[in-house]
Image (spheres, chains in turn green, yellow):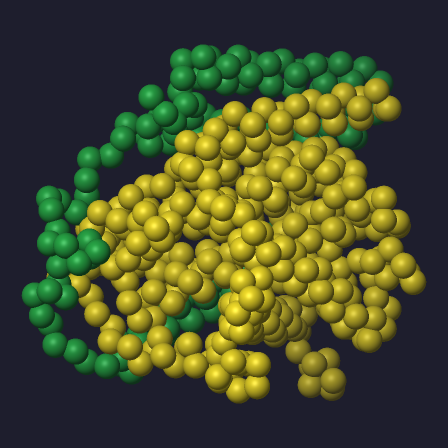
Length: 129
Length: 348
């Protein structure tokens, strides 16, 4: 096992502890909890004491889909920025590299900005009508 | 110590890792339990009430009483829910919030051991990756409950969290432009050597955006729309009871602790203080303990800010929330990246 991968062993240990702890909490609660009777009222969905109307999962606004799609587009752009940010300071100091590393990313950000402005103009970012 | 010498290096690694994991987990659970009490006490003080004071002096046994109560309540699974998801959702909220802290350096060193569970070179990417998983728990809870309030709460939280994740991800790019590394230990080392080296002073705008996004990511007021009591009667956790409900609650506070720890590390110099040589790794055992103490003090201070804001600010409307995230914070973060890069380019 390489040292790179061995670094993740403690992460897995912590994840294991978290899973066991959460499982124990859920399990203990079943064991220790008071037993109650099942009644029809307890089995209905909570709507502030009114009798539930219609289905539990209502139709949802298409805007939630739109936000999710915009998120994926911009999140990928963010991921591209990280490796660039890490090497930027080292590369920009090297002769001849300043132009490509600076204006290259400026171009990329420009394209992202055009897409962003397009989404804005098309009212993709507006929540109200 | 003789027993230690007989172990191979990989055995020692596993042993010390286990000790660190156990220590961090214990401290985190203690913080989660007692920050709830602190929040109730601070809330009481702000609203001119007394707050919990029945369980022990000043109510210090209140977290224990709450835990016992949660365990002893009826563990009820309503008939109309989607059972598998209903059971998975509280775990899906709790587990990521506990795993996030793995990469945070909570001290310099004790003896030869570095005080961080895993000093990953992808540092921040790991944290953002795990934090993103937290969305699933809330969405799953809303879907599993098969009921209107939780469903709307789950939807709102998913849209809110992914929107602010972009602002959060962009806001830290200038930090890494300056530091040149994603590893959090090196982010802290970069901030050693004077107050002005703290990134909160070098990148105040980045910190402001990160802070706002952190409030939104942890569903805290003024961004607590997923659980807005007055309109959703509690949001995604309406159909939950007993320990399953408590797990959502604990998950929220663990997330808050993780977000505060991230901010301490990225912007407030982590375990360092630029006086009395406390910004260099400790050479003695006592110095190591002191560094952990400094880290915890900064963590507590930031968590108090979270609590203070909750009782001072009204809630945003949903369109205001989206407006702020997409039309204000995102362009600001982009502008900050370009400005920082230009400044570094001109200086080089």
